[in-house]
Length: 100
Image 1 (spheres, helix red, strand yellow):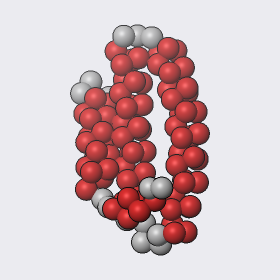
Image 2 (cartoon, one colour):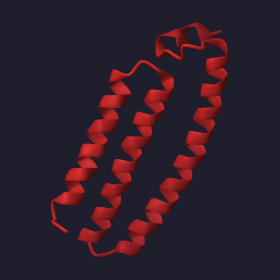
Image 3 (tube, one colour):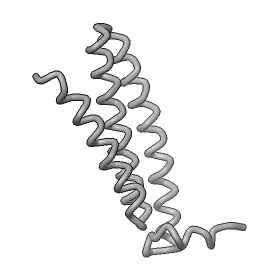
Image 4 (cartoon, one colour):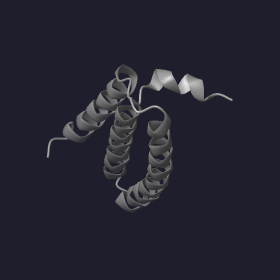
């Protein structure tokens, strides 16, 4: 595999996720953008482990990050379900009304 492919793909995923996060107004699409960004970061960690020739450390970090991401996504998706109950459109601008 070409040496530049993994870092380029990692950066592309980070940029794609950031674009999705900033340009979309629906909450679920922003969560998908956040997930894409996290996958790009994890790919960067794996590539960094390959470059410094310590794949075991990189694998441990990625597994830990995947566990944290799974918990965070479960909590966020549970919150999104509650948001869609009160605001079926799911627009991020409507969430200002949730302030108490």
